[in-house]
Length: 239
Image 1 (spheres, rainbow, N blue to C red):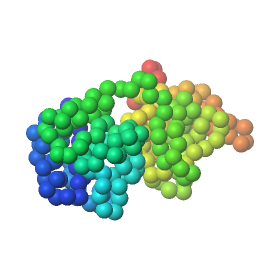
Image 2 (cartoon, helix red, strand yellow):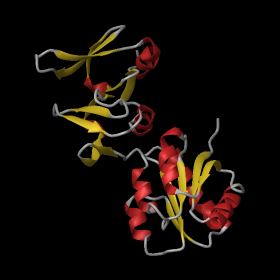
Image 3 (tube, one colour):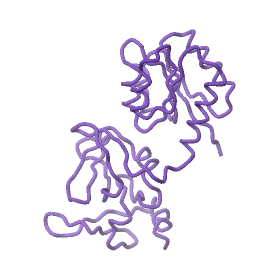
Image 4 (tube, rainbow, N blue to C red):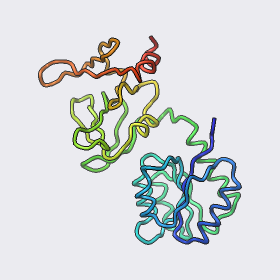
């Protein structure tokens, strides 16, 4: 099993980017997926890239590295910058580490080890995930979720049914991203377009899941249990 962190490197200055890449190639815990010297280009390719960690400069033309990090969905970030004054902002957005240039191998190794520890160690105390919605950022608490489905208006978005019966529209987030963040024992994907909270299930059979939630017509919400996900679902509920 590959336990390396898949990593993107970003620095608008090519000598700095080349040097950072050379350092990373000496650290066994990371695998460099791609390097960028333009933050806007990284943004355009972000959804097509499989990565766990971004190592980034902060002051760059076009977009600030802090703002870029806020746009990433649940990715680890290490900042490497010549400026000390952004450190407080970096840790406010839960950056793994903040390294001031010139970057030394030992210091970068320490930061990447911290990132690896955070990535591989489940956060048992974590109770929510921060996501973008059509109304701004939200803290989506796991215990408030009944199910998540592909939004009708845009397949890149997801609609969440909350325990109070309201709906929330999550912007541009993938099911795989959500499943990495949701507690594994409490949630299960049941078909191509839906994830369900185990506690929200009232009944189920071979092809269908009935929820406790009632629709406007007073009938219980139902979800399709597809053949592709049936085996995982049955294991999850320990049948």
